[in-house]
Length: 452
Image 1: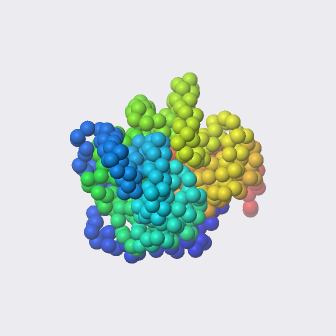
Image 2: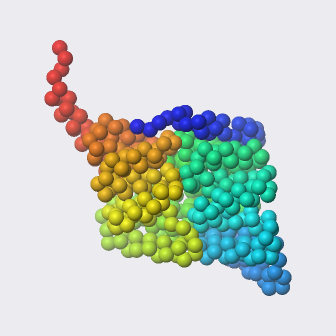
Image 3: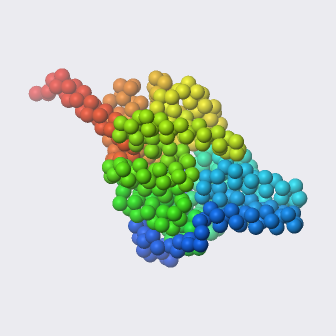
């Protein structure tokens, strides 16, 4: 079904990842990585958005007096911090333009050169971010920031071997919040959720106590790891902690809503999703809320929520943020514009081999009745051994249509074992399929004569 992790040479790197850095981190962090007490200092002087806007305005005011590369890169960094927290496409675009202005004044300005791949990664322009980050690395090969941006871009385009090497170099240079969080993601991708949780716990503890965004982001990542492993109580603690640290952090409420949905607290989940949307409309919140409403039989309400998706997509495009697989996967999931969704994913897969794109492509093929192509794409999505319940669910449903009943049963069982409540609608379908497979298996056994 899926080749084991040790059949890939990269598996050796991943298993050994942080050998040079984790011992250092563990020597300074003896406590278990989670659950963690959400006691990081909170922002109490006005909203974070207002304070970020004020910082941007101060830099812009200074630029009116003196247009220097240093001020333009300061503006770019301030805009990027706002963009990251509030999913603000306009701030990404302002950051990009500020970097360009700095380079117009000084073509070799290192501060701008090192920021550009960060901006491009935020805009999902990963193909451009790779050479940009390599340029920054060539200028300053010992700057962990450059290695982080390069590793991020390589991971997103599916160059996992190269990405792991780069992130290992980053860890060797500086075992800290930034390198721990990336190493955690590599562990997750290669089917080691326990290792991912351990290292992300170290990232949480290494976060700057004066940076609420860094603290909230790391706790959300840790919460997602717990949720994806079916550990809902621990996930809830992390999401609640993130919301307490940064009440304006939309992703914290999305995570909390997922836990509440898993624990069948549907009213609370709807409230959390709506709270997230009130801060900023994101794909995760829209689809999560809409799917939950459908599960509750509230299709008309769900359609109103889903109507936000084209607006989000248009907003992103207008600010040079490239579309990912999310919308196409949603369309496949809901049997909407299937030919368009499939063409979009085929175009993306022609130059990107990351497992998320491959999984979305597999599901679009499945929904289009092209099951052999779906199976081939699904195998590519699962090639790293990633313990993602939705991957196994898709793989199982594809095998079911191909008549491979044993493989379908094993994959669907694995999906529910990884995360018994990974999605309200898909979990119900998986359980229904397993019941049908059990009946078919029973009938098959009845027809088979017993040996004497």
